[in-house]
Image (cartoon, rainbow, N blue to C red; front, side, top):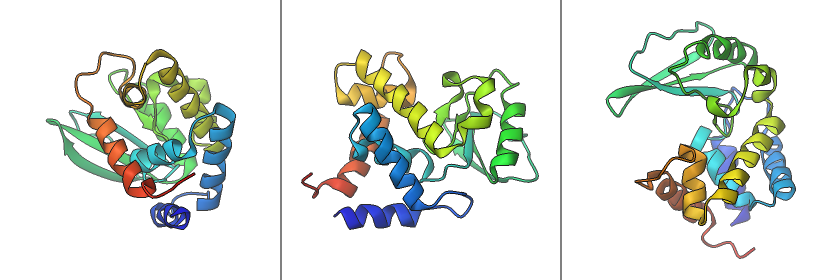
Length: 188
């Protein structure tokens, strides 16, 4: 089953990345050890959030006006708005992020673990796409959720939605389904 999980990681590896699947697996494992979080939890979050692509920005907007010629743009409908995703080189993603952060209405998710812009400052832009930094920072966010929530279900939901009161557990359900699909037969 470990081989299956690794093959899934290889499958979801994106050609945009300057990182190999082994780099991603290594950094997830290191953060798991450092923050005492099950590596399968971090793996599942990375899979859900970015499909293992560390060079990605996403946000929800009422408009599709955003355009960065050097980046690949995907737009899909999302709750009467648009989910906008940009992929490409780290250099151009950083430039786009600096521009997007000027729009205080946007809540922008960044990098492999899709760290929300409410959780980082502008002076972190140069580091936020770095694999090690992104995974470490997201692990700290998850640890803070674990510290204030009483259940894994609430902690996972907190990672996605913040500390506000949770009404629906749609993110946790997505997490649980992905986790069980990839790890239900693993005994370690």
